[in-house]
Image 1 (tube, one colour):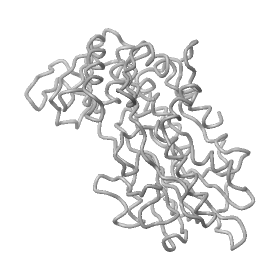
Image 2 (tube, rainbow, N blue to C red; image 1 turned 60 degrees about the horizontal axis):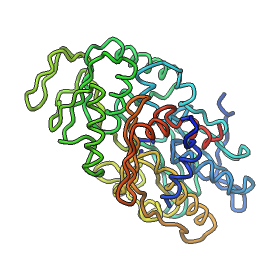
Image 3 (spheres, rainbow, N blue to C red; image 1 turned 90 degrees about the vertical axis):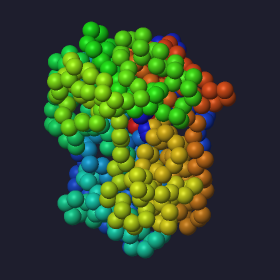
Image 4 (tube, helix red, strand yellow; image 1 turned 30 degrees about the vertical axis):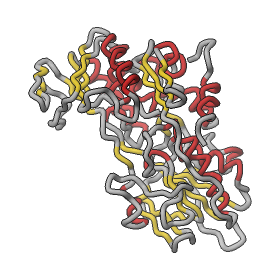
Length: 411
C-alpha cells in the first residue's frame, strides 16, 4: 500500500519512525475573497491538493511565511485528507471505525491559523507569464490568483480505495465495499503490488475462512525496484496466510466486479470466484495541469520537474508527491523529503532569490502489513534490510501509522 505513495507497544513509536525516516531523505471555513494584492500588500501562495505532500508544505509554510505579507490558500476537492496507508483495512471492515481518524479534516493544518482552506476542484491554470504568477480556475468559475503555486494533486487509485469527494458519498462507498467483501466467497485480487497484498491481508484478517487469490502479471510479487530476496520473503509470508498466488498471469476483462468464475489470460480457470477486485494502475491526477503547457506533463501523466521540484520552464510553479516525473516508487513516505525541498524553494522564490535546495531522491523503503499480525518490509540501505512480522506489525500493521499522520497535521 502506497504509504507515493508506510504500534503502539513498548517498541519504537510513530514519532521514532518519523525521525528514523527523516535521516534518509533530504465545520468549513467561511467564504473568502481571493484577490491578488497590489504591490506592497499580501501575495497568495496557492497549494492545489491537501494530501501528504501538499499538507506538509502548507503546514511548514504557515510557520515560515508572515501572515502580514502572504495568504496561504490550500485548494482541495474533498473536505478531508485520506491517510492512504489505512485504506485497505478501512475498505474491508468497519471494525474500530478507523475512518473517523484516518480521514482527517484540515481545521488544524495551519500553524496559528495562518492559512485558508478552499474546497473546490481546479480545472485550469492561467499563467500570466513564466515567473510572474497567474490564476488557478475552479470548476465553478472562481479564479484564485497566485504569486507562487504548488501542484500536489496525488493519484487516482483503484476503486476500492479511491474515495468520493463528499462525506455522504464516502460513507456510502465504504459501506458498499465492506458489504461486497463480507458476502463474497472467493475474492480474486488483480495486482500483487502493495495495494493488492495489503487488501488480501486485511480480508484474511477479517474473514479467515474466505478464499483469496492474487493474480499478478510479474513472476514475482511487487516489482523490480525491490530485490529478489525481499520479494521472495513476502511471497512466503503471503502463502503462509493461505492466500493463493497466480504469478506471471493476468485477467484482462475487469468490466465487472461481481463475477461467476474467471479465467486468466493464460487460461487458468478460477470457477468459484465471485468478486473481482482490481488493485493496480494508480494514475497521476494531472489532467488540468496540461493547461499550463502541453509539454509540462509526460505521456504517462507525470509532471516534468527540475532538481528543485520546479515545473520545467515555469519559475514559481512547483510540484510534489505522486505526480512528479521522478524515477522512484510513488509513496506517501516520500512526501516529507519533497516538502522540505519545495518549502525552501518557494520561500526563496518569494524573496527574489535562486532556489535553495535540490531533491536527490530517497532510499526505497516499504512496509507491507498483511493484516494486524505481521507482514514484511524493506529498507534500501546498506546491504538491503528486510523487516519481518514483528517489526512490520509494530511500526505499521497495528495502527497503520494513523497517530503519526494526525500529529503531522496538527490533530
